[in-house]
Image (cartoon, rainbow, N blue to C red):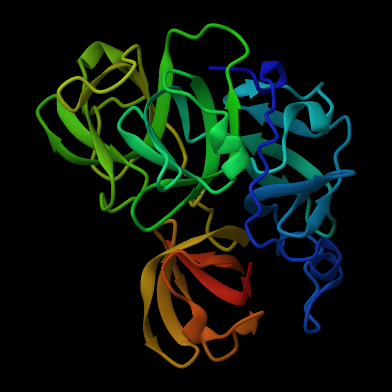
Length: 326
């Protein structure tokens, strides 16, 4: 893993139709987006869009000496916000009830490894068999095959990473990593992809029992894991795991917790009017007649539209109070 504080940032902000920070933090349409969860820690997960504190989903989350700051599993709480986090990184903020004091800010990349192929006609490249889309043409032009890079972004309906942050490694790296959901488990192989139902792009992973950590029964379809490998690219379409560790996906939330989830729509809506069911990065979201739509309407919810969902977790479903089009 590459500690974020030791990685050189490469002008990697990708504009993704950001709403005004001021309008969100002060509220839109009479809705106040400041404040914590209902009776417990609130959770906000989305791209960092500014500093002076850390701005995520239009809210300035205050950091202090008590704030735990994690980057790719490493505790870097002593680091300054701007030295650890970068604009475009997708992070998860856990904050105090009743205010915007960040208890914890966690960054985990989607992928880290060597670029195995580049396609200039659609600004995409591949790492460990998975595809990354870079909308920033100037940044894309600086990338080369075999560059080892760290990538963070939102997942689209094809299982690709729409990168908001890309950075080259600042030191030699001989072990690489990819995070995703297990599907198609068969013997000592499975498919790994970025959507929980196994749809979209996936890569085959081969493993031995000795490399599995924290999974007494071994890999299971549907769980979210980090796979480490020394392979620079798939061999015969397969990467061989040197370590497999179970993680919590950023779309996993405790029941009854107030949530802000930013991401791309990955499943088209079903239903009618304002009573809809759809998915954001594979997370089921439901709206009702009381849901307030800001910057758009129900019919605007379509695959790969960027939205912010504010709501409450209930039985694996995010019940939306607000849908904000980003």
